[in-house]
Image (cartoon, rainbow, N blue to C red; front, side, top):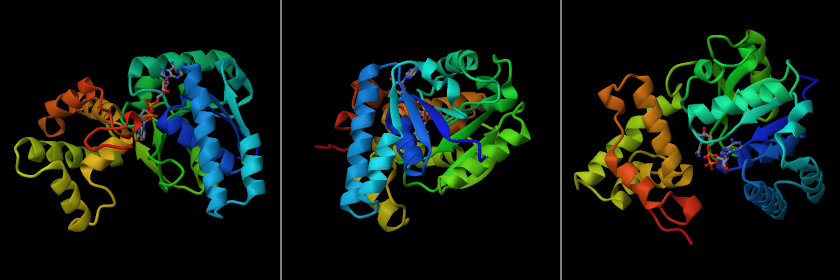
Length: 285
Ligand code: NAD
């Protein structure tokens, strides 16, 4: 763990940007790359703005913010990751994209570099299936917002070495997180438990039992949830949530209790993906 100083993050969207911020806030250097250059620039600006807000709120000193910003390296070429000790992939929830990135990373970095994926549901064994050293691949699943949510799932694929898991557990603790080690099963722990939370809410809404607003209010007031299922889908990204539901359903060979709801697909098709597009189930300024 003492040798770990530099982390690469592939994908600068919602999760990649949050993870990179968390990393630089905890004294590590972060390189962040995205296939879309504008997204890298946007991620840098949003990380810096969030760090500045933490200083305004006196949660970090101005000096800590200055140092954290210096440790953040927007990167326009994945080749810049060659000296990273850990690389965390946070690209869309599609196995073919993730597999291609791991194959690319294997060519770029040292063979002892740990390659982690932030996948919500895809099998780690499947993602690492094509690469030469799958023992250094594991899941490192942060929750949204990555800087705030304390839980991190560390997922051990069938070929993941015990040392890889141990290093990632130690790394998560350095980031002040509570890691839990999971087996490589569809949706791991949290996303498996959470599927009915979203799916039943969509069915209740579509059956006109209650409105979106009522369901969210009831879950918060009576169920003591911090967010309702619709507000949470908007935060996650309805497209990201739908991709996870489809992946868990397919991985359980179509088990009906995980069946996605068509209304979620309609929302994705409409382009109203949640907070990131200014609207989803709710409207955002
Ligand atoms: P996102 O759509 O916000 O960001 C994905 C980014 O990956 C985009 O900026 C895209 O340009 C980039 N990308 C696409 N192909 C790429 C490639 N080949 N190389 C480099 N970058 C590429 O998605 P997200 O919400 O950040 O989710 C990323 C991963 O994290 C997914 O696996 C998702 O399931 C998981 N996850 C998401 C959440 C959440 O709440 N959004 C929570 C936990 C885990």
